[in-house]
Each structure stands twice: as C-alpha cells, then as structure tokens.
Length: 541
Image 1 (cartoon, rainbow, N blue to C red):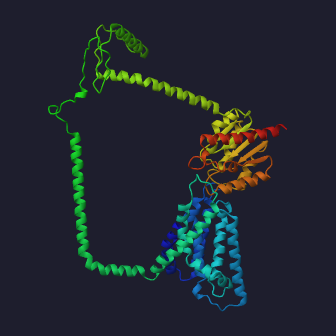
Image 2 (image 1 turned 180 degrees about the horizontal axis):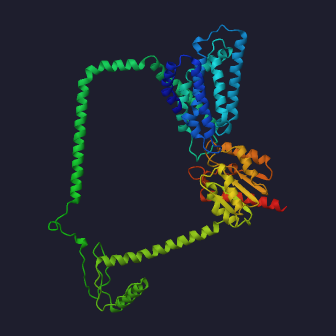
Image 3 (image 1 turned 90 degrees about the vertical axis):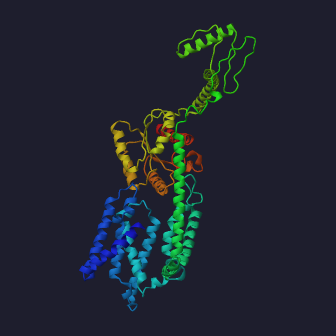
C-alpha cells in the first residue's frame, strides 16, 4: 500500500514532465522499462537468502518495477483505442497470451512462498510481466477470455476487490490468535477471514465508496456551508463557554495544587503543636512483688526483675552481643530502665529469628527437591557437537548434564546463513565431533541449496541430526518442509521432529510460543539426548 501510494504521488508529475519534453511515446516507454529493469536488478542484488526479505519486498526502490511495467502497458496498449474488429488469428493470439499468463500466475501462487529465493531473483518480475499479459487480454474488447472472466460473480468481486485488499490486513491481524495457541483451527479460521473481508468490502462499497463516488462529500459540504451562516453565532457562544469552563477548571486546579504543595512544605511551629503522648518515653520502676507487666499500646513499661533474673538476662545479652561482634554490657544491680524503642527493637529481633529459620528450611527443601529432579547423565557427550540458536541456549544446561562432554554452540538470533562460518571455526579448533546436531530455523527461513551446501561442508562426519522448529511465524512450515526433504535424501542424516513432539504442550513455552520454560527445556534436552544416544549405538553396531 505504501509503495502504491508513493507511486500515485510521484508518477503523474514525472509522466507530465516526460510528455512535455518527449512528444513521442516510444522513448518514454523505453525509459519506463529501463527504470523497471533497474528496480528489479536492485531487488536481486539486495536480497540475501536466509535473511528477512522485508526490505526488498516492501522497499519502493525494489518493488516499483511492477508498477512501471503496468505503466508501460498503458502507454502501448490504451484500452480506449482498441477495436473489437480484429482478425480471428489476432483474437486467438490475445486469448492464448492471456490464458498462458493466468496459468503461470496460478502456478506461482501454488508453488512458491514468500521466502523462495526464485521470487526475488526474477520470479516477481516474471509474475509482473505475465500479469501485464493477462490485463492486456482482459482489456481488449475482442477477447473471449475477457467475456469468461467478466461473468457476474467474478465481476461482483472485481468491483469490490480494492475494498477486499484494504480490509484483509486488519481482519487477519485482529482475528489471528496469539503465539501460545496452536494452529488446530487454521483452515476454518482462514475461511472465516476471507468471508469477513468480502462482507466488510461489500458494506464499505455500498455505504462509503458508492456514495462518495456519486458526490456524497460535495453534498455534505454544501449542507454544512448553508448551516454555517446561521450557526456562526451559536458556535461562537459554545466555544466561548467551553473556553471559560476550561480556564476556570485550570485555574482552580492549579490553585489547589499550589495550596497543597505550599501546605506540605510550610514548617509547623513547635509552640502550637504538642508532641503526641504515645511518643513519650516513660521509665517506671515497680516493686519486686508485682508480676510481669507486658507492654500495652505504644508505651513500653518494663518490670524490674529479680537480681538473679537480671544477671541471667545480662549474661544472655552479653553473649548475644559477643556473637554479633559488638561490645558486651555488664549487668546492672538495679532494674534496667529501658525505653520503648529498645524494648520494641528486641521484640522484633526475637520474632524475626523463627521466620528466618523457617525460610532457610524451605529453601533447603526446595534445593533438595531440585537436586532430585535434575537429569541424570544418559551417557557420554564426547564427540558430539550441537549448533543452534536461542532455543539451544534454553536446553544447554540440561543437555550438558545429560551428556557430559558435549560441545554446544548456541547464539541468539542465529541464521542458517551464519552456520558455515561457525562450523568452520569449530573444526579449526578441533571441537567438531563425529555427530553434529543442527537446530536452526527459529529466526528465519533458508533454501534447500543453503542447507545442502552446509551439509557438504561436514564431509567426514558420521551422523548429522537436523532438528525442525516450532515458531509461530510464517516461515515455520517452509523451514520444516526444507529440513524434511533434505534429511530424506542426504546420507547419514536424520530428522528429529521437535514440531510433532511439542504439539499440544503449550505449557512448555513462554508467551512467545518459541522459548522454553524449565520443564520444556528439560523435555527437549531429554528428547535430543535420546536421539544422540541412538545415533551413537548405531555407530557402534
């Protein structure tokens, strides 16, 4: 949409300049096609297999060739000047060209995907050219194909096709579930999305597009202009009242905030405020025969205990302070005079100790249970190298415990295009084992050619394990299909189907539907370790 709108903005100006300085259409058509060729070449040059193709797909400079091909067609094939009185041979030629173009378009839709390298290195150009042939055939009044394609159902859709184009994206975005949901209802949901786009496009065409096309905006503007003269005064009054209300509200709001701030910052004179009674510290000596009095309220009153009790208390205090590293305080003969703060502080200290003990016991129990749940080694990991992305980092701690000695190289955001350099580096350091695990595809697609080239670099490796992916992104099916096709034909290579093994286990994943929680990482590590052990046993046999 952005590319199209930019084209609508600049192309008329450029075309006007061209028509002014070039009286003949031939040179203008050549320049237009040359610009289209430059755009297509830029797409092929900027595209990098295995990386996100959004830049070359959405870039105006790399996609304008399709619009320029259509513009060139309009110059050489003006529909208003075409005549229905042509020879039969010419009519058949037009129908064959249009029919062949339509077949190629349908095959391209069926056989290609948005991550196919062919699309960005000539495929989209071919699709634009054959689309131009189809448009040329349908625009000709003598075309039989145009009559077939102009049947009522297709014509009804064609009239509303631009509305369908505008509505499809918000409908898909708003109705697709989050990544934590499975794709069980993908096909029914897609059918409902298509129906919703058609219904919304039909409604917008009837109540928005058609009225605007027949002058609805002009009529609305004229009515507003007629009412404007009689309503100027009322509008002015309404605006004046609204401004007065806003000013008053602003004034009182600022005044109240200022008064609150001033009140909070103004110091309170000590003469007019008396200290609350509960903050006064009392020291009271009670007779020996009186029983213990516990503190009540905020004022602490401590009883004078017997000399023996005092001596014991003094010894306890001394011992506790000595343990804490502080200075010991000798016991006094008379009853200690303690204030509220000291009494409360000791009470709090005495009450915190049991809680801390319970917490330590719970932490110890949790640690013991975690040690029991930790995976036990399943065998040796020597001679095994695992290469992956952030998912490999999730399972790394568990896999290292299951297969001690395994070499794991994982990195966030790693693509298949980066794998050859990583494997070459590991091989140079002597860390490339006889069994190699490749877990890539989470961050983007790759071509079959790229994968085969990577596997060819592993000449001499006994076993190669390819792990497919689960990622709620459009490239998921592309990656898994490519891995399955290569694993089925390449020697000493097996496919580990993580996608099927994780189906229905939504609790294994975080909200992104990709990265693993601890229980999921443990399951994945065990799943992979079993496959590695099986490969090791086959090697021994």
